[in-house]
Length: 317
Image (cartoon, rainbow, N blue to C red; front, side, top):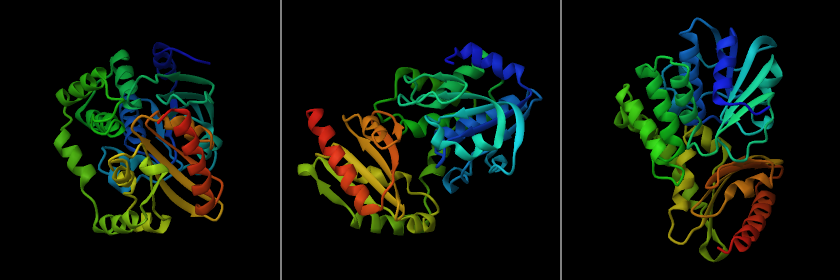
């Protein structure tokens, strides 16, 4: 059932045992939102757990409270399971199966499939972190410096530090509010931009895999899972290299998992890549989306490129 932000606040106020989770392959928005909401609710004396299907990527372990996030172990009961920044059930499988509770989804993806008992979706928000900040203000909860760091990271990472098309005047006002409350953008940026040597070495191989298609409108790169692990999970920014090539409308990053699965990330300038991702059971935003193709690398490339060229033609690009 679709509910208002006030109804969300009421549900959180009424619940005493709350589990908070977010999507697999967590990013800055999902983690920052989780940690901020956790800190606010725990300060009210509620029993709150942070569960994720995946480990926290190394690049985000500086976030205050990140060490509290666990993977689900066995079954548990709660009053409410809050699913943040996830657009479909496939992205939260393990936690949803482990927790018996009413489910509430708070999200900003236009591709959201409304898969929980209750949902609040604001597709105009640049990040779920913006929604959480509005929620905390509505609930009149204290926003500490640690919460500000988490929410600034959530918002800034999902809009490319205010460079992407989803950054609005409201986004900047939210960021200013968080700076006033203790977030230091230069410190956060330094944490996010500092890479281990393995990541830079892996980048060489990723750039060697660069391919250009569709008369220069599509650029692809590939990163292998073992290389990603050696790079301490810091592959998130690799897709920006093909995206920044002059004339490229669509950048695609392939990450083969095994012979039957390939993860795919999309970034674009004008193309609605959420449509592309949805065609393969994924989702996301108009300019940034992703999916998993049930095929090895060669088959996934063929399918994705065919669909991408068709979408470019339909979009007149």
